[in-house]
Length: 123
Image (cartoon, rainbow, N blue to C red):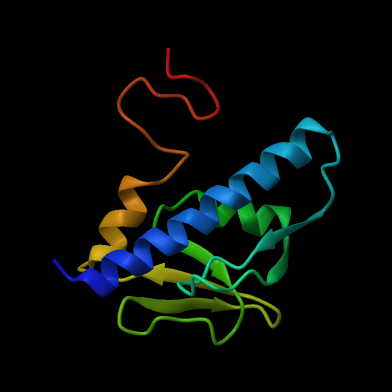
């Protein structure tokens, strides 16, 4: 097991989870703004930078467990690639043969075991 890749995956999964809570709160309060202000989902444990992304881009990124949103330059090149560049943010994809990708898949809050429905207790 590559400990660095695993740590990258865990750090990014943590920030993805934070952003899911931000998005849930935005939806609950019926704000539904066109843009969503989230926390950078990079591998840096000490990065709490804010990233503003269009809601449709956020939803697109959340549709794939291996995609993350980050500031330009906040890339862990040994575990991920820049898939898209959008000026103020980039879309990162975990390399499929890394521990980071395995962690990203295993910790995706929008996915779960058969019968699981995101946003519910799975029952």
